[in-house]
Length: 399
Ligand code: XUL
Ligand code: CO
Image (cartoon, rainbow, N blue to C red):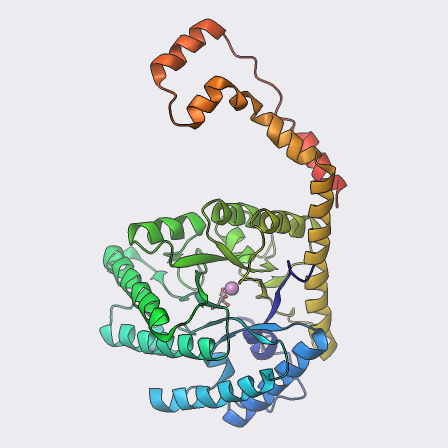
């Protein structure tokens, strides 16, 4: 089970989440926090994070550069802050199996990124983002990180009236190519991942969903260099199910990691909740099993405690519940595979293509004249039932 389920703590939610929302003040007051964003505080927080992971028995973590270390007045000062915290994390990793599942650069919080980062119309901002990603790639590599994620945050537009979409997409593609080049230069073996999200904070992001991201990668010759990090809450924001996004990534050889969270069907925001729905987890795990696992990717709990959950204990409960849910999903998938009825139902659905003519079509040799002749010979086809309720019953019976 451990081989299938590499879990990761998201530093930003678990250790920087305040419980604040657009209408309400922060609600968390963790005993290790002193209310500052100082370097000393960043160190104490990193130690609390390692203590948490060790107690939880989880040995992967994900981070944004700016969440683990504070901004300085200049890039030099900021990088020095980051180096100091990364050095501490490196020391804390010694003697453990702990390492980053992935790292990323936070390219959305600072006012300089108000128009985007690689998609900013301001060349100095593009360059700043490049310098930041360069450093974030280097520290991820230094900590033994296994993947690196691109979720720019503002790689989209609020209105097309002032936006040159073509130019921004070209800038983004050039930026990602330069990241590939730098990755190779420093010998980072990890996977580069793109995390699609349709909107929030921008109205329309360029990496809307898996299919959009895939066509972007194809158009700019970046396939082979990137995989996809599917986030379940982003999937539903884009109008798809998480299962749909996972399958779209999987069948295109792009499924690299999962941000295992969920949204709220009534709220409609990216609420980043821990996934506790067994049915959803079973669908997620069915894609993972068909994918042969996610390695070197895994499951990042890109999820935060609800605003009203304020005990340190709740941090443990949330992660344990998230892990148990995925584990139960995996067991259910094993049950479904062992039973075989659902697979058999799918196999039967397409069995007419196992015929001579079906094989010809699947080989791309079904010319229209031959098919027309066949229709004249066969007459009206008898179309069998799709057995949808049976499929749903078989699935639900395994839960
Ligand atoms: C934002 C989101 C991010 C990325 C990393 O919606 O999911 O936390 O996972 O930047
Ligand atoms: Co995410």
